[in-house]
Image (tube, rainbow, N blue to C red; front, top):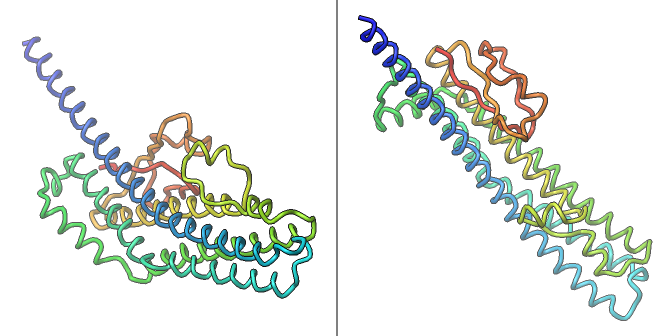
Length: 291
């Protein structure tokens, strides 16, 4: 009898371990998918920013030729104003390109959040989602997404666009300010171009690069893309949770050396759905449903 009891306990422990593993893999897969989606968004934004950096460099080179017979600080005001106008146009083009597809980006992130929720309930062996087929999974995502108010999608898209618009505005202001200061302090045109900088995609090279106008814009655009992707993803998952009646969730951190002092104490804490803390900019945490 004791051996049979021990066998049943061992089976229960194994079952619990298997389910815990399923949940962990579901969460890890969803986070990886979410982060890759954010990384793709960052790449799109930086591609536009990189093109702008090339355009700025070309404009500066063109004006360098005009100034070849004069000292840089003696450039005529009309030439400088002309350059500033070109910079404004480049910044406006950056914002216009960033606006394209922004609603689709938000919708995609929200659908990934819904998919995350479905995957969690499958791993938790929820009666309605255990062993769910791919067809039923797609149907659940479509059904939940259809319940989301269009105004909510518009709000998230417009909020992100406003943040990115600020980046493009500050980019133009920073470039023009750097050029004007270069004129006043007698810097050469190549020196001014170095202060303006460019997009640096290699992480190690980025760390070593000095402070430049384009580096600052790159940092802000990257943070916005990651944070707003996470926000839309979380919103989609939240809608799904409410649709299926989830009342509580458990907070999970990345649990590594980069985990911040704000999030570390929250790891494993169970929250009511309406009391889940707001994720901070650039956050990497997630939550899992509690049945």
